[in-house]
Image (tube, rainbow, N blue to C red; front, side, top):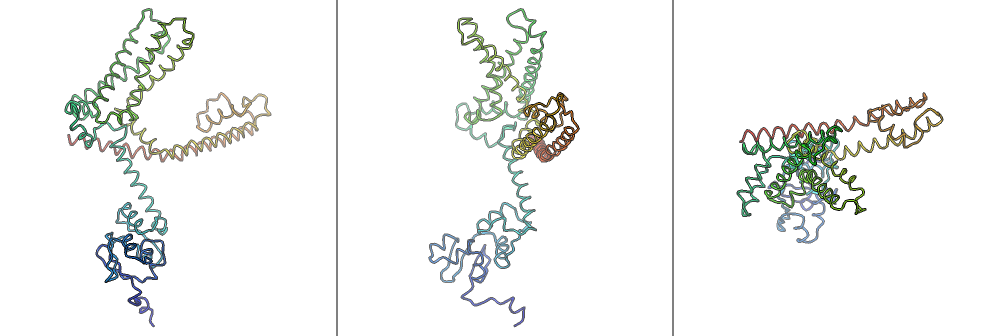
Length: 426
């Protein structure tokens, strides 16, 4: 028998399985399909009842012994080649998600792909997933200023729907109208004014040079907090879903920047009312100072109006694994080099690296290449360890930073292009 005759031999008719995938018929030998019995077709030809068969295929003709599948015939060619040769290859012209769903239906895993296809397939799928996450976060993330069109239908049938919709668009979308642009500019000016006032108020000459009960800076801070409060209340009232609105990170920042002002007023009025009689208010001043520190959250309010700050926040959100890896590497390096430098320097009486906790501080500023110079090794061996610590710090910090910066650039460019497109449409 010639080799060509063996190659084209179809076998006995009773040993052939009739498969109809997407309108294309295939006749495959039963022994070929049984090479992978855990796949869908392998399980199908082992079924003993029509009910079991119909659970694995879309239709079945007992008269013709034919199985029908309403699936992609292109992908099935790859699946069929896998049964015949044992080698699984992907089609580059198909969508990676579509291909992944199809092979999952047939009971074949992505890791069954050959090495020549597996690398580019996983890389392309990862890129598409990142892009999909970026589009999803652009539409629903805390950093998106523009109003999502899909949210506007939620106002229909609600109380004062027209007024609330106008308020929502004015407060959330600076490109909606001239009025919304004016509100956005005013909000930024008030935020900057409150930050400048907070900084000036920290200077000793302005902190103590107030003989009156309320200084000009206190009045200015009062006006800014009233503006923030009114703006926040209007956002809550106008929101189509207030319960989800309050759970938004940027809106939580707005609340955190306003709440300390009112809590501080409550503590101060309570302190004035009780005087020295209530011993539980001895440390009231310290509590008030801690609450005033929370006014620094006002800086984060600029994220609502700053593309760069939102891009940074989204980058950290999408790069949690890389940031966690960076922290892990730095922590391991700090623990190792702090112990190493301690046992290297402990015999030197003039060295300030007298304990491992002190060496932690030295390892932190060395691995992050800050180097304050307040503590440093004195011995030659200690300087060699310090050199290794700095070099390892450079490597550890630089490796994840490239990935984080690439994601930052992608998000920033994508959001900028989307913003230009929305402006062009208006």
